[in-house]
Length: 437
Image (cartoon, one colour):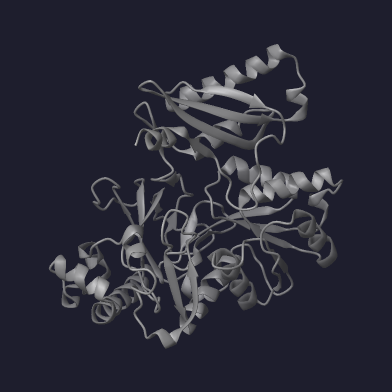
């Protein structure tokens, strides 16, 4: 462990710290952030009403929409001169969300990312090839700071340029790779095309995040690269990567709840749900200075695991993400997440971990077509065998989700690859609605 004292903190001590930090946070934002003062006044709440961590449920939620509305500095809880770094979300659907960092926030970020890398036993002898994007995106610099804190050598490769990525691995003896899981698989595919066995390059460990991925995809990554793959979780609105991470047990992600307090709520009613029940993850930044956030609705779907992990860490874990509320598709009344489709596909022999879901509407009926890449051997088989595979996939999806889908097998490497997050869903229903407007 990077910090055994913190990572094995007794529950009673943790609750005491959380309560003290929450009380201090609420007093600070009430005094310094008009946005939160107005929200609290609207709900009839003052800092004196918050005395322990259990009182957090009395506070109002914060949404991404609200954060965009106060762009750029509406959530600052310190003087501008104390801000040393700013990151933003992509802002592809409007104004971006801003995360502003003080010097102490950068130190906090480095610390939680050191814990994250420590989950995979990364140390000062390792060379970390960081293929998350640098810039306003938080992924690249978050990993960078954590690797520095641990004392590892960092290759700031950033995303893309796969030929250069492979060259760096060969020249500098990369032992740790960090990127999105979909790009990692593409990199393995690209290496094969170049006549390079990527599993022979000395890689030991990989940390992957920024998009949901399944256990089957993990096994595929581990097999193709010869590494141990770890899931990591974070988001710009909170701090970036470093909010939660898997240990070697790979049984949920340890939530660093001494700094970020997690809740699970019913996404429809906002009511708190008990540990073990699936719902929407809500996060409060207990110790962040620059732009703290209270009860942020992440839209990520998961549940809390309260049982102590075999690794000895005592903080609660979250189950690997099932997806996001806004990723969820409703097909003929059935809630469907892309990760559910992925999990089913990767159980079927001959299917590659590359797929795309196309949702459309014919008349009043929603339709879903799944484009599935198959390997070269399967694709060159006779038509009858391909038709049998299509029926098998359609049957597996129907049995699991209760909906009929059309399966279209496509040749290897025909689905577009991404150097960042993979685009899994094309929802043409939205285009139809826009056209009618």
